Image (cartoon, rainbow, N blue to C red; front, top):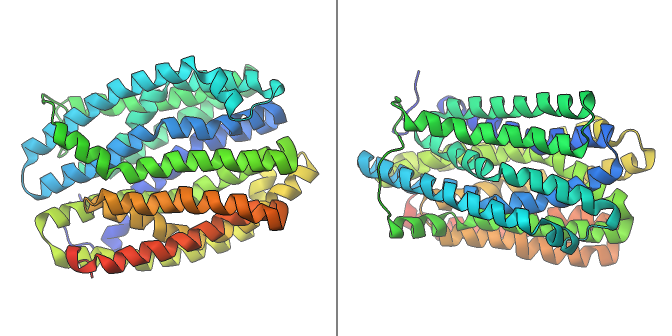
Length: 443
């Protein structure tokens, strides 16, 4: 049975609607996880450290897709809620066409300046060749990755979350198969990892364009449009929180790598890379819930359905609280086997990684509320508050604590920085939710 944005959402209906988005985000995280797993076990520690050093930069560059996807999908969903489907499709088409052009420009620029950027990020002479190689290969697929990220949001607005899930499964499966083929069978090393990821990302971006360009039974279709400067500005403003989140996360990850290189050398960077890979899986649950529930919030806000808005708000608080507690317990129980799969070949590196992950995992109890809170205000069209939460959470708080805590606690200070930052951000998130409850009528 098809679930519509205008439906009343019970827990069962809500789970059925958002589960594809959660699985989709987990599948998306497969890109870096699978690359890291194969490179760590079949290529070597230095290429693995190079991959980890470049990944924050590449994710940071892709943030345009997050901005257009989250900011634009909220505006399109609100317009659908107001009953203006034709206008919603014009907005959708314009944003996708602009994203394609922006993706190509950014990818070419990044390709040209990859070497000096890699040096600026702290690449050693042993790592620089690997950094440039991996980075430039992924620049080829960067426009496709940006489109895939954006379409994840638009598929949900189109009431087709299952198609988004299928695309993620296809892209993720392609990445796994080609990683094995290129690295294990053909012995292409780090280049094989990059090529496998590029193939998955291109599939994830091109296939949705074909779907939305043809006749379909969804709410959205690519077609003729014109330039709406005010909508592009609102999209960028409204999606600025996601842009800020991803850029800030990339900058903070670079800072983590700098601190770890100083405190523990290449092993520290490798350990942090493993922790990030494993964390991607748990974070995907919270991000997937935020992405999956946002169009429902936007639609009901646009339709003026305050009762359903309150319903979604209450259920979200309960779901996120239970999920955060459950994921933290699960992460602590699985810390040994999860990290052993990446670095079990090196006892010293494995011990450092496992210990660091157990401290880092305490943040899972808190992060869900902050991720969802930022996305909730984006869905309501309030990009300023959403950006404030993201800016404080991912840049101000994390940067401050990762610089301060290692002074007193050395390596443990790096691992505990995220927990402290999430706790500080939680106070900010709930303060905004309390302050704006009467304006948006979600309480």
